[in-house]
Structure formats: structure tokens, C-alpha cells
Length: 280
Image (tube, rainbow, N blue to C red):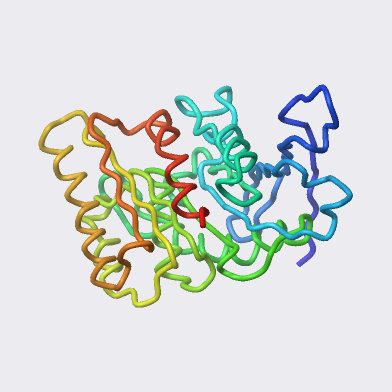
């Protein structure tokens, strides 16, 4: 089905030299026929993307949920991940390859429904839509990005991640649609939702991404008992992944002492996550 897109192309970074050598953030108003709504896709292009000598180069793509929280504190819930600043610095230093980052905005009032694949009483979501999210990514978002940007093919060049409920739905996608994403970033995943049903689903998964970065803080909730349970949920996921064969270079788990459930904490761990997932 043909889709129409209205595109705004602002430059995120300012340079006194050639503007094509700096990263650029492009915003696309993106309608979904699967969810019957519209959101922004925020596409950050790495330094040098528009240089003539790179015209034939194709790039890996990192898809991140809750796009409002990635690039701009003015649009974020409470701070930003600083994705553009971190990626720019690591790319220029040669630590990670030049990579396109795609922030997929959440659907605001529909966020809970789209990010929950299971019925839940806490939070109350009786008609979840999250089981449609793999199709939304694979049939709508990824083809649009491939049609409009120079994207390298294959799961080795496609990464997915998010935080909180955005991490929960990323994990669900990896389980429900294996083989599409070769790297997975899970920050403070809401594994407790729907009585930890996602962990039961994970136990049955046999095909995981090549690399997984799993991060959590010790003060996620602010209550000692729930903080302990949050970390234990992550440890349980770690055990499931290790039993599935993700050892050594394939799995990194970071439990950050004193870190909270916040964009500030996720931004602080983002450099290590990128180095692990994208570094050689």
C-alpha cells in the first residue's frame, strides 16, 4: 500500500566548515497503517553521510524506541539519551563504525498499548497492541528507512533497543521475530509487567541476536524491596540468555550502583552499550 510522508530536514549540528561532514537529524512524519496513527521518525545521519566520496557507502542502522527522549531535551520525558552527541564522538574517534540512528517516537497516549504485548492489570491495559509491533517495525519502519537512506542489508546491520517499556517491546520483538535484528539494547526493561510473562516467553526462545546489552540501576523504583526485585528480574533474564548460549562477547550485563530509572542513567550507560554492540 502506498504511503505519503511529509518530511522536514533540519540540521542538528552546526559547523563553520562543510556542513556535510557533521551529523544531521532529519524528521519524518510517519503514518502507520498497522496502528492507524502517526508519529515522527527521527533519523540521525552520521558525519560524512552526504559527502560525495561516501555516495556508494551503506550504513548499519540502530532503531531506538521512545524517539522523543533520544536527541532533544525539549521533547523528552525527563532529559535525553544524548544519542547524537555520543554517536558522533565515538564515530569520529573510530570506536564504532558510522551508523544511522532511527528514533521511533512513541504514540503518546497509546504508548502503553503499543509497548505491551500482553494484557496487564498493573498498569491496566486490557487491549494491548504490542503484538503488532514486530510487523510495524519490519513491514513499515524498516522499509521506509531502506527506501530513503543508504542502508546495509542483513540482521548484522540492524539493531534494536529501548528503555523501560521501550525495552520490553524490544525484547518481545527479538523473541517474536527472530532473525531481523543482530544487536539488542535493553535498558531498565519492564520485565515485571503482566506477571513477568516476557521472561516465560524468553525461556522458549532459541534464536537470539548475536549481541545483547542489558542495563539496570540499583535504585530504579526507590523502594528497597522493589529495587531488589527489579535487579533480580534482570538477573533472571541474564540467566535465560546465558543458558541459551549468550556468553562472553555476546552478552554484557551492567548493574549500575545508585542509578535510577531515568534518561540520565541510560545516557550514562549508552557509550558502553555502543562500544559493546558496535565495536570490533
